[in-house]
Image (cartoon, rainbow, N blue to C red; front, top):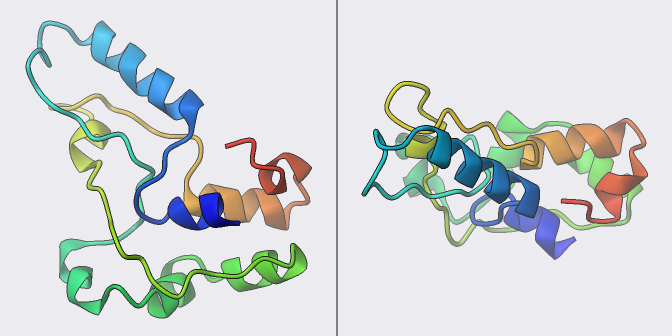
Length: 124
């Protein structure tokens, strides 16, 4: 449950890290010397930051299925998002890596809602 909640700001799945590194290698030398943060995108925008660390509004507005999916798994939703890493440079198609992580909070909730047992077991 804690690992799932951390997908809202600072966690990344190992398979997504490997994908990010492979994309960086393919884009050499264009990305040489640059730093890219590989963390699951939260769906937050800069203008949202003053509303943190309270996470209830974020989940209600951006991932409305989270409450039901977590309740079914007997998990608890996070009350706060204390830290958020910005992976937007890695996501950028033209200037970055064009990275698209498979495991995000929203994709986890969608998988849980569809009955995917791997999602609940922490395959991310």
